[in-house]
Length: 402
Image 1 (cartoon, helix red, strand yellow):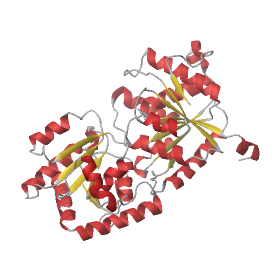
Image 2: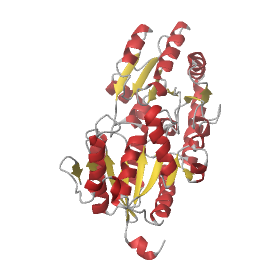
Image 3: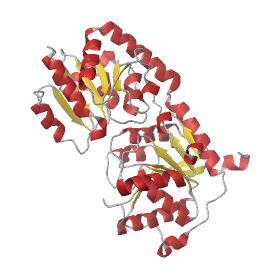
Image 4: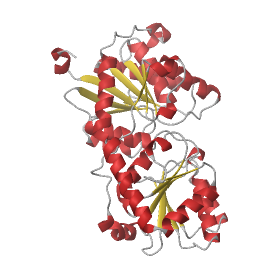
């Protein structure tokens, strides 16, 4: 890159999903924290208002634009949001648009075409699960993006899109996610957790693909095998927030399962655990898994997606088949019965994260992609697609925070 390019920071517009606690959102916070502001100026555009992470973004001295997109994929709301976003792109002279998930990517891609600026980087951080019209849109975004970033080799798209794909593993700030044995009991007391029984836990959005129900079934099997004292901590929110406690009650686990909801102190919660379990049915490269490993927790994870790329079986953790509560229960019981062996796995897990998955190294690789994409030939405007938007400015329907 020329010296003149270095003197003017490139503007990167990030399009995350809703600003609630989740792996993609925590990934974005890591990127914003370590991004070289002398080279890149970040803006975050959220399709939805609200969400507890908005405060963290503003606190990081990053401009936040919140739109007001409805629930339907194709609607007047979508057209309005595209127009508002295109106006932001023109006014802020956006160079690169980093999109996550299908709907933010659709808005970002259409807005970039309308504004005549902004090269598209599509980020895929989980295995595709959308079907029908939404799946078609996701596939379209992948095919049309200038570059694609996935966080695990297992997510690389097939065909021509694979040649435009960079595999950049997720990264963790190992200064924040670290062993906290000295604070374990105090954290348990603060969270209302018992101090005696072993405590296992998981972190993730409460949806079918995350497999939290399988973890509860595994704990029910442990109870039948004579381990009724095990407690389970579940961090996260989502569509199954009511169903999972009901399942726990049906399994006789109502007094053993602690549903903590979304948390901004995940690093401290992990420090209160004895064992971390990732029961996903599908996965990309899980931030929660890396964070647990960085905390030196022994981990049990399903052998799906990028998990086997992170966990060296029986060296930095234990891998089990997905949707297999019996295998999961056996792995949990084995580690709880062998605390010394479990501790060795935890130490090796942290060393692996420090060696391969540091957040600063991840961001440097992302910056290289952004710089290369920004220097590519500018995209030709297709304002005819939404003619009324050509002179649009940022609408009063959107909220901008600086």
